[in-house]
Length: 417
Image (cartoon, rainbow, N blue to C red):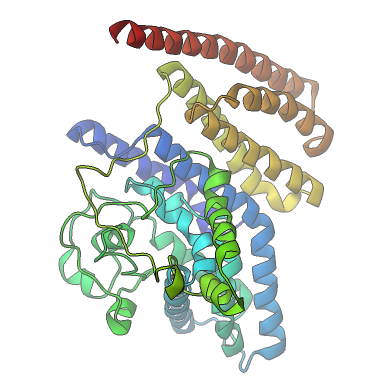
């Protein structure tokens, strides 16, 4: 079983999301949108399941540096662990800050900022490629002589701390905010208002921002999201979008120097001959509308039911990944990513959503039987078959009614015109 604090905290995360939903119901304050929240959690799922592979590489790199270049062997006493926690948070600040200030690195982190809402589900929205651009920031800790196991533990605790600061339900906290990162400070970080962009990079201790000139107090209510709207509920696309756009921009850059600067300067950098860096757009609450592609109630309910099943399967996989062989891991990760992607295209009401979901329903039991659980029992086969057939019939009925509703809406609009 994975003893990572992040994995062990999953039940707490969802309990807090439940509390926030209760607050929404009581106060009638719109905190969550189903499509956005599902996308946030889907990005967290893709990051965690791909992390089964990426984290192994990052931990292996840390261990290699520790074994071969450590200057000291620091014992894990309580005071050394506190020091390690502070050091991890310090280097987190720089990894996080550079993830905003380097275009290539921003592609791994931008996913976390794409949501136009701000709630606990946003904390789970993480980029799958971010670890590739940040793991080496922590290698000085290995050189100092802190062992790998305790580094992973403290790194996990720094990440777990940051969950609770993703909320609008907690106001300012007085003197605590001089030292610690709080919901107020982090709301600023997620704002796309020009004065808020690239501010408050701290993980746990806001003192780093105060020391290095990136602190900004929360003043007017932030407008959340990024300067160019993502407009998608597909967790795979939102992870790739920035790099696709980077590839297009890279082709237009003339000369090695411009191409290098485009990759390693701040997002939006352009050479003078192309007009210089792109300006940060002002926020206009009257014109700026959240992306909110909607589908029918029954289709949303179908996606939600499927999603609960996917969550259960993902949790089971994460808690038992160490017991699986490489092909079982690869198959499981592929199935999970396919599943959350299918939910995304259903919520976007894509024309190919039905084909994608039916393909998933066919592949799912075959992959389970052939690759993931080859010694599966007859009872479990019957359960999987029943689930697949029931899902397929439900989807056909719901999709048929959904299309009839769309045709009726179009005909009604034409009649009015």
